Image (cartoon, rainbow over all chains, first blue to last red):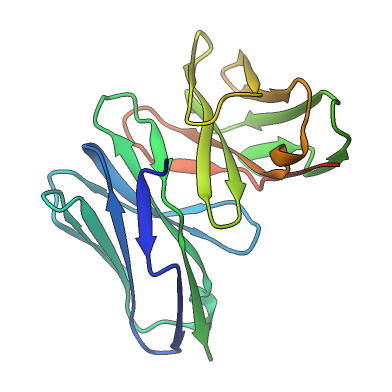
Length: 112
Length: 112
């Protein structure tokens, strides 16, 4: 079964609005990452947050991590049409082997 | 040139045929991964390798085998392809201790 589950599965917003995606996972982790995928293309790494961190920022991205709830959120501020893509969370296992397991993804559409 | 190169990019084959998907990288990373992507299921880990002598099964290894011919090359084989192996396959690499994955552009396989 998938380690991570994203919510919502799909999200449609107007350009300029903020987009929030959530990820829940099942087992202990070393880190949690977010990736972006444009339709049918390879995934691109956005941001990584370690298990001992609670919040991280990168440009218009803000990621939070709550290990007690086994959940994370990705906030994209001031969205642009070019942000339209699928977004996946991925967890690196805590066993030191960095087996990276992906969630099911959120499909974001930003309407110009 | 792409850092992570997958060949072929598209392949149509028939049930029972042997198929090999190849991945090569110029990033110098020691860790390599094969994932399968199906609509609505996100990415599922097939096999991963931390060096030439270390190969591990992922979530869905049945029906697949791999070969790490060199640090830079990691091949995925389907010994006898079946229709439910129709999917988009991704190779990814990672540097030890960083966790961030770098993806190829994918190999779309259709088994008739």
